[in-house]
Structures are given as C-alpha cells and as structure tokens.
Image 1 (cartoon, rainbow, N blue to C red):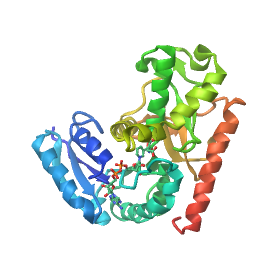
Image 2 (cartoon, helix red, strand yellow; image 1 turned 120 degrees about the vertical axis):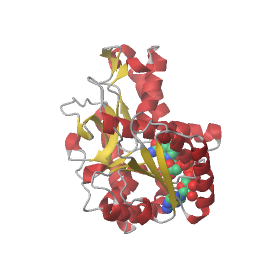
Image 3 (spheres, protein in one colour; image 1 turned 180 degrees about the vertical axis):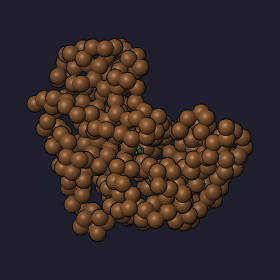
Amino acid sequence: MTRTPVNVTVTGAAGQIGYALLFRIASGHLLGADVPVRLRLLEIPQGLKAAEGTAMELDDAAFPLLRGIDITDDPNAAFDGANVALLVGARPRTKGMERGDLLSANGGIFKPQGKAINDHAADDIKVLVVGNPANTNALIAQSAAPDVPAERFTAMTRLDHNRAIAQLAKRTGAAVSDIKRVTIWGNHSATQYPDIFHAEVAGKNAAEVVNDEQWLADTFIPTVAKRGAAIIEARGASSAASAASAALDHVHTWVNGTADGDWTSMGIVSDGSYGVPAGLISSFPVTTKDGSYEIVQGLDINEFSRPRIDASVKELEEERAAVRELGLI
Ligand code: NAD
Ligand code: LMR
C-alpha cells in the first residue's frame, strides 16, 4: 500500500541542529521506517542558500522515504498543510548567557509562526518547539494559534530527560535501557527538576538504589540542569546532535506511544495538575498512545521535590509575565 507522505516543516533548517536533524527525519527516525515524508524547510533570507545546500545533500542521499523538499522564507508557505512542525530556528545562547536571556531576541519569531500554523497547518498538526527559551516560545506560538487545540503545542525537555537517564545509568552501572520513569518537571532551564523518586533502575526504585540525597542535590540535579552550559563551554557551540536526537525521540514517542510501564517528559500546556498553573507550558511525566498524551497522575510529590518543582514553575510564570509585557501573548 502506498502511504500519503507526512508533511514535516522544519524551521532553522540551515542551522546546526537542522543539519543533524534533517537526514534522520528523511531516513525514517521521526515517524517510523515505513512513513514517507515531505520536508518543508523554513529559513530567513540569509539562510536560504545554505538550506539549499543541505537539500542538495538530502537529494544525494537518495532516501527512499523522502518524497520532496520545499525551501522558503515565508512561514505561510512553510506551514501550509504541515502535519508535524519542528520549530528549531532561533538564536542559540553563547557562553555566560542563560536561556531566558534569549527571550527578547527569539520571542518575536514565534508569534508569526504560531499564526501561520493557525491559518495554514493541517488539522492534525503537532508542534514541537526546540528554539530557546523553548517553553515560553511554545506558549507564544500556542497563544497565536487559537484555532489549534492547545495540546498540540509542546516544548522540548526530552534532551533533559535523556541526559537524566544517562547520568543515572553512569552512577548505577545500569544500562540506559534498564532505566524507566524518569521525570523532568518545569522549565527547560537551569531551574528544571529532574526527578528520580518514581524512576526505576532494572525494576527497583531509583532513589533507593542511589540512596544518596546529597548526590542527588549536589551532583545529579545540577549536572542535568546545567548540561547545556557545559556543552557550550566544551564545544564552543550549543548542543546539536543530541538536541536533534531528542527532537526525533519526542515526536516519535508522541506519534508511536510510550512503552508499557514507562513514560517520557514533555513540555505541555498545564491543566493544573501537580499545582502547575493551568495554561503554562511546563514539563510533566506523560504517557502517549495513538498520537495523544496524558499526564501521569497520582504521583506522590515529596518534600525534596515540591520546592524544586515550584521554583521552576515560578520561573515560567516570570517568563510569561515578561512576554506579556513585550506584547507577545
Ligand atoms: P543555529 O544558529 O545553528 O541555527 C539557527 C538557524 O535558525 C539559523 O540557520 C537561522 O538562520 C535560523 N533562523 C533564525 N530565525 C529564523 C526564523 N525566524 N525562521 C526560520 N529560521 C530562522 O542554532 P542551533 O544550534 O541550530 O539552535 C537552534 C535553537 O535551538 C537555539 O535557540 C538553541 O538554543 C535551541 N536548542 C534547544 C534545545 C532544547 O533542548 N530545547 C537544545 C539545543 C538547542
Ligand atoms: C541545551 O540544553 O543544550 C540547549 O538548550 C542549548 C543551551 O543553551 O543550553
């Protein structure tokens, strides 16, 4: 049976994440090994030539699943009929900056893109915002798209989720595949809270396996939360291949479902669960099935976790107030 190609729009296609992302989308890692895709690449005028070069390389790879590439600097054309939109295009931070410092530089990108998605995307559009500050940029785009169900706008905390798994695997000597139910709460920023109290290492409670609250507070949490800055310090540029990999994981899990007994972390519009004010885009533990997701309910939030979740949520409220002030929502 010939399947209709899925339209995947990628913004910032000529950037470093774009370069790491596009070839893997075209080889089936975003949606599945049997799902053909048509790529729509959105760039600013200065990025168009480089995007064309990347498109030439995509052609040269002769991916059987790739059914076409369009390149444009017009958001209305880029999102026309889009089924999946990866909003990557934005300035990355450099040494010494926090991600929130990018709000005024990048926030303005997401309002017109949200409107273009509202006016032109397909009815089943799913949006992932990668460009920083990702949660609040997702809020800006979502606010500009009143006709699209709010839950279709998500922000990427999967990179943090994967980082937490990797650090926990290192500490415990377990395989990455033996680690389940890690949660990232809050903002994709240094205030995020990677929570292992409900996580499992080879079927055992992770916090009990680690049994070292000081390691959690002084090593694990800051290592995960400040990993982006550590990568910038080491590479001289912000994470790219790991970010692209996490973006693929995010959408693949959203579309194809979480494994039984496991969950993932996604920045999503809060419904008020766990005391996170409704409407903020905050990271939660979620299960996914048939292209939809649900917040994992009923987790006990202990005294160690509560203030850490609250601190990150407070930062999201401050970012929301700042973009209101800028007229972006
Ligand atoms: P980059 O500078 O290499 O590429 C960004 C690209 O976006 C450039 O080609 C630029 O021309 C393009 N661009 C700028 N404005 C645009 C617009 N309005 N429309 C379309 N394209 C536009 O940056 P990068 O390293 O690829 O990072 C991109 C973003 O992703 C940054 O904001 C970075 O901080 C963020 N990021 C987020 C995560 C996460 O976990 N959420 C991880 C890594 C990076
Ligand atoms: C990351 O987490 O690596 C990205 O958000 C880039 C950054 O600025 O930290």
